[in-house]
Length: 169
Image (cartoon, rainbow, N blue to C red; front, side, top):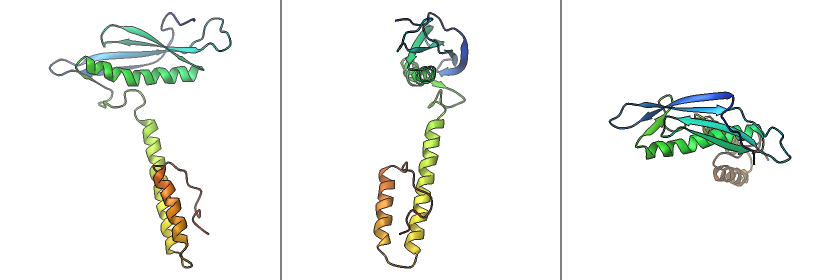
């Protein structure tokens, strides 16, 4: 199966800092090549995203396959985000980007968005529950409110609630 022989055109790069106790910090460079396919691809041939890594042991070139160019690029970024911290640990240190150790590539944007959406869903659910419970009238509403809040709790706040008045009977 064809694979890209070199990094090719660099579309993105990042310099990370390798911190090790008792030693000066060193730079670890990661370069992402433009995703490419075979010169004459056949049906089903993957896209490849080459990744060059230097500064953490021997310089190397990884080649990550995907169904399309975007998937190849995302998988290459995930490879870097998941494997480089392990390699830095084996080298007796840790990697940082902008002073953060946890997310070297995606900077927690995905996690932050999920947390924000979950929090908003929880707050909306609580506001609607209080409105429904304070509404004058029959009290079987409490069971409906409890059932819907239980579903929200079980989803970890990720269940998207319908627009306002979803607790009304």
